[in-house]
Length: 357
Length: 175
Picture 1 (tube, each protein chain N blue to C red):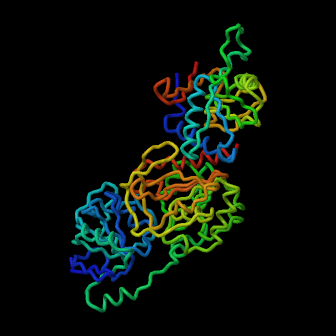
Picture 2 (cartoon, rainbow over the protein chains, first blue to last red):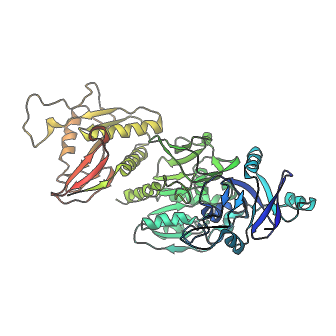
Picture 3 (cartoon, chains in turn green, orange):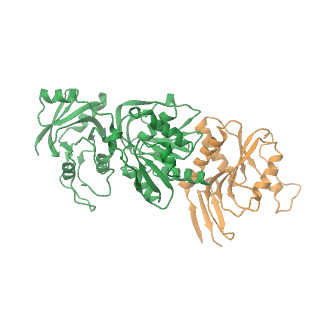
């Protein structure tokens, strides 16, 4: 494995060994503390523009399999690991992570002290980073000059609607950076799903005579999307049960008068206990967030807070007071990670069936 | 032969959804009184009140309703139990949520209306049931339904709640 360097915006340089693609890459560096599920993480479109650091020290040991893709096109800019495992054992397939990354032109770097790196990232604000061949002044100049796009949703969202057929309820799924786990859960519940682009209007939704609407997770800041998206949410929630997650949740909050803020450090992991307020139950979920809904901005006559993160106090779920619409910050589909929250899809369908009576 | 149709998680979810729907319909919890029909309706009523309290930070009164006095299928005696466990409660101008476990013929609910009239004149009464099994004999329908379970008349629905039965479940028993 060739020697390569990870360089950070604050001037730090780490020496490591290359795997995957040998391309030079630049992105925002984030830390993911999940113990498992690297394939779901790498293929999740929320990592568009981002280089993912894994705190789990050995990555690659379960290869890549056909059941764990969260998207077809992988948008992550690179991955950083303590140790890349060359030996992978998995009955589902024989593609290695190294080969997969080469196919998708994603560079990886191994042999990095990810514990030290994680501390550094968490001390700083969000930083850009590059994986490069040479860590000279020129490379740092390039890194500092790099401007990351804020048009991520436009880039990852589907350009045209497509169906995922079933015999049950007719569900519209708005794609802000669709995670296939959502489709899997809806397929299990036999829903007839139509996936639509991020800029779909409420009229286009209603014309398809749906029973409910889901707003998907996605990359980037909710404030980078135009007002028309918020209008779509406002108009649709009056007519149909709605379930929003991740970026969709942040947009749902904005549409209902709340505000969002950028977290000092993005949170990616599944180790935070989350309290469901109505039952006092503690759950764990696959969390990936760079933004959060500001609890002080929530208008109590419009929204109810339903879930709270017990480690950092962030709002993890809200619900509309007047309509059967709710949203969660985490990824309820459980890909990867705890499946405590999969029930929420059934809760959504119960809202749907309750409205249809 | 029996079959579990609602397990612990599904029951929790149903009560949670009913709670949210009550907030939606009632525009909050102001002026609300929850009446639980004895026996299991009382426990479901308490759970709903508990959820409302957690969401809204306001105590919602729960009253136990005993409809024995107004049942049309038993002989009445002078010592029929009182209709409410709380003597002082007045339902005048309140928003009442009536809670029962199973909605079947509708006769229990009719008796409950009679019992309620002893306690005052509410602004409105809404009905929440965990299970709607069909076969109504009176023009009554529920506003909040946990789960619709189509049944045949010969089947029996058995609701168990943790507080007295040691577990949460709903079973269909085929006689």
